[in-house]
Length: 261
Image (cartoon, rainbow, N blue to C red; front, side, top):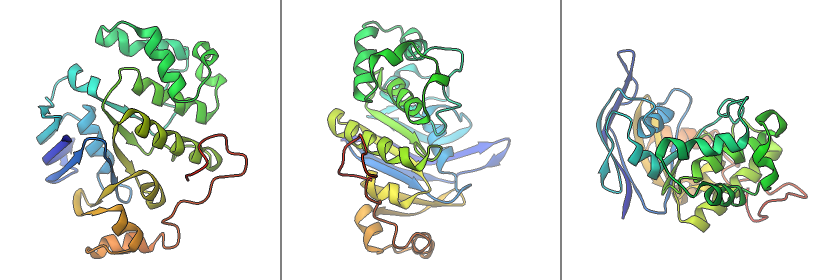
């Protein structure tokens, strides 16, 4: 089944068109990456899907249900976003409990204690963190809270906008392992935005390579690893990280899954 379908998506900011006719499908349970240099339009696509960029044309559907240009709570329940910066995405004056409770207030949902505790367990945070403030947590712990906030509504799709780029290198592997485990355990669909081909190699099944607001190639991760891209720009992008496509081994003493990044 198709989890997310994008057709002819064009997004504009202040009268300037940023993306041009973007189309792709993501199967249920798949991890799909949007890759490209800064300014290629990959994050703009994610913002249009999430509803943060409303000046778009085309079609966005999750499990066959179209997204409107207005606030769409039903769409948001099935499709949640994890932002790049764990320092900026959490309100500094709200406890973690208040942050995790807010989605329930917005969507009028109950059973919040069970769902919050389940989300904290899923991201590997002890429940005592629930009543701390963001400044009392490390960067990696904050990003775990951001992931937990996305999980409390029990969505089917997670939008991941550079989920590790703002973290210390020593923490990045832990978060990537966490995301891979959560996807496996909960059967989630991922749409990942990143400029890092090693992250794509580890976390994704397929990828779209973007340049100047357009998709220049759709490819499998096997093509990425083998270097069998068709488009010259795709080959050029891969050559910049030649020898780094396979993610490095885990750091000594890492507390997360040991079989990954």
